Image (cartoon, rainbow, N blue to C red):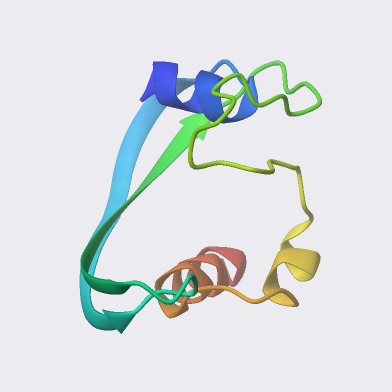
Length: 94
């Protein structure tokens, strides 16, 4: 997890705690028009980032095209998968 977060955002993390997991299955056309039988597994962790920096993507050409710090209220105004929205709302209400 430490390496993945660094590659995708340039952040150094510690105190990693898994908090949720889910999976979804789709069969149909992708946004590019290809037929796909796709299974998504989502794992959500909480971690400490003692020294946050401006996000930098080190895994150029990978699956991440953007990383940024976003206030919770702004995140909730964006298009999110239902799993992510529910978890942010649940954590934000505490």
